[in-house]
Image (cartoon, rainbow, N blue to C red):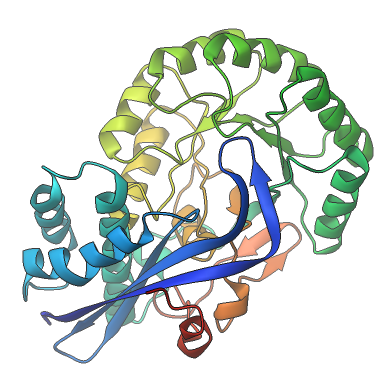
Amino acid sequence: MAAIEKIEAGFYRVPLPVPLSDSTHGTMTSFELITARVRDTDGAEGVGYTYTTGHNGGAVARLLAHDIPEIVGREDADRIERLWQKVWWGLHYGGRGGPSVLAQSAFDMALWDLKARHANLPLWRLLGGHDPAVPCYAGGIDLHLSVDDLVKEHDANLAKGFRAIKMKVGRVRMSEDVERIRGLRGHLGDGFPLMADANMAWTADEAIRRARAFEPYGLVWLEEPIIPDDVAGHARIVANGGVPIATGENLRSLYEFKALIAAGGVSFPEPDVTNCGGITVFMKVAHLAEAFNLPVTSHGAHDVSVHLLAACPNRSFLEIHGFGLDRYIGEPLPMREGNAIASERPGHGISFDWAGLGKHAAA
């Protein structure tokens, strides 16, 4: 098989069309996109990427440009598990999270893209293949919006074909959260899939109090009510809050997911392929969830994540993320009857507009 010839890192600060806000990260006007392009000795290329909400992107890019190439050398690009282990342990002492695992995730994604391209298969088929039509939802980053503006925003999402919606919660006053959920639920109607995301806003006790207040509104899930480190707190919320819990976008290893799932602290495990260790780890988390009879969802990177959920019989909803790359890719993710459709193009099928991204290259 072909060996790794070159790893090229890209680092971009991409402006958002409109400012976005949540309970933890504040107002965001741009995000950092870090890309990995892995070329092999056959001349083929695989592409991966990760992102941040505005900081640490330079550290991720440097790891991809310098440290990871030094660790992997000219290894066989097809031996993804071996390469994953080499990078994990090569970065382990100063890693186990943060920029290291984001860089590893982008590299791993590029390797899987390369492998699927060599096989002339779409990624979802290479990973096992289940169903290319994946239920999806519009992930609003809308904590600052009034009830009226919240309704208007999601009317626009309904007009785009979405048949499930996620809103933000985490206002200082619980009554304001309840008012916004009540308003959107009243507008969407009973039975319409509605999720709420708190972005780690509360303690476990406060999360239980709010979950009980939200219970009458039939949420599919309450997402990230507390910090990811509080495993016991998550288990208390699942047991006492009355609302299913989704979390995992800030977990950085298979082992963290194992601890949370085994403790009964999550109803919908939610890995992010750009920060959990890549496709290799995302699929292991999905299979671990299946073993516990849990549905798996995703966070971010929907153009790639659609392939991963399309390979999983226990998939639930795909998040269509607010940090979309539609302006910078050749063929944005299609949607039909509330489902995102994984492409039949070889690999993950993303073709970046490198010239367009180049206008936002970071120093």
